[in-house]
Amino acid sequence: MGGKHDSPASVDAPPSEEAAGARSPFPEGTPAGLTNHLLIAMPQLTDPNFAQTVALICEHTEKGALGIVLNKPLPMVLSDVLTQMKLEPCTEDIGGQPVLRGGPVHTDRGFVLHRPGGQWEHTHKVSDAIQVTTSRDVLAAMARGEGPSDAFIALGYAGWESGQLEKEMRDNAWASVAVDARVVFEMPFEERWAGAWKLLGIDVDRLSPDAGHA
Image (tube, rainbow, N blue to C red):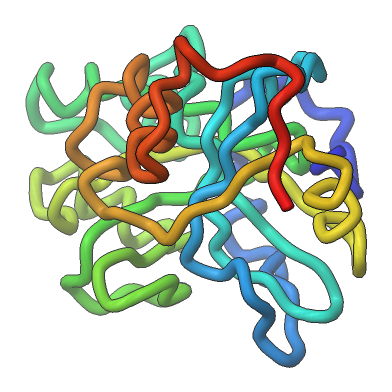
């Protein structure tokens, strides 16, 4: 589930400099329906990688999908990532920013989610309000205090092969809702799963584990 190319790298390891220049992981092809949606784990989903998670689907085509989990902080901070890349944060506040576990695939790769702004070498537009950058230049700018607005980094991603996500949706592993950028950038991590449910008008505390969707 959501892990089509599991990486042997530890989720505790900051991304290597070499990983920053790797080929784009975003699937190519005809856009499908869940790009720019939040994928919300159903209460009965017990996979330890995805239980009570909410993920941003950055790209969904007939060839597969890529998502970034938005609510699972790692036991590390931005300065750990920057040090690995031979960068130094200009302030303690910058260095102390949390780092998320974006998913179980290629956990040596960093994804910076941010609002539009700046010119970066490798940026993927999710929507008019959300971009994902995978190049070193954005981290260097963040270290200097010159990064894009509301930026944060996630290590790894969730990946689905062709038809896999659609099957998981039919099996009631996930619900989905159009993205509200406030969930991505403004809501505390620990509130994002419940906050995503609220976009559907659902109080997750009252949601039966046996609930599904059409």
